[in-house]
Image (cartoon, rainbow, N blue to C red):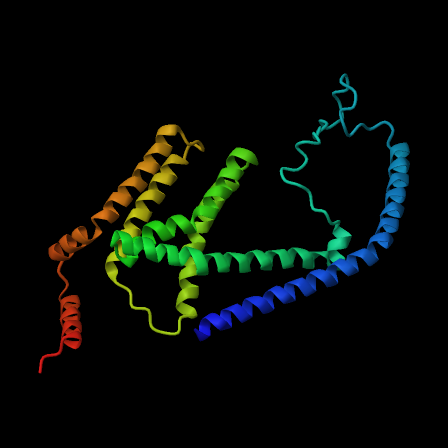
Length: 282
């Protein structure tokens, strides 16, 4: 209860600080708007004068293919369409405005989105995951490897879809591979560093997930050798994930079989000691 109150008070303070920063930045931007417009107009005038002077000095050298019959001593002209100038809406602030404090508005929006994401995950996602786990009667590691992984990878999925089908660039592949590296290196290390107690891990979930991860990375590297992904290759990757879900359904049975085939004396002694501690005999 105290932790919940502390989280609510912290969130309120963070929101209030974000609003104060937003108001201060907005007031400062209103004051500097007129002065910056005058400075920009003066800079544009000086740039036009410099371009005119340079055009007079270099009249015989054509740096752009303005005339179609000119093919000597020139570089090809790059025509940029207004629709292709930017894949996303441009920034509403200029470079000078961002230097004078408008960047604080971006930081405020970023902080607000992080706080909103924390509230959604803490108040809705984790409780719903607990209900699903109880209804389906599955273990915590299976729920974390399926439902938690799907929910945590949803932003990456939509980012990849937007990057591939809407923006039409290579942000999707970088997002997938980079986020996997971030989850392995940064998330695990932060959880271990900021944990208030010792985290006891078991070897089976690590062995299971690392095995599938190595197989999928090997397939991804093989499929990317020709710098193309065909439909049957994509179907093969999806089939491996379906196989992983089926494997997770029979996780306990497979785990018992593997432990039976590969017995570990030390682990058996630790399990017996744990059973003695839980059920002491007098």
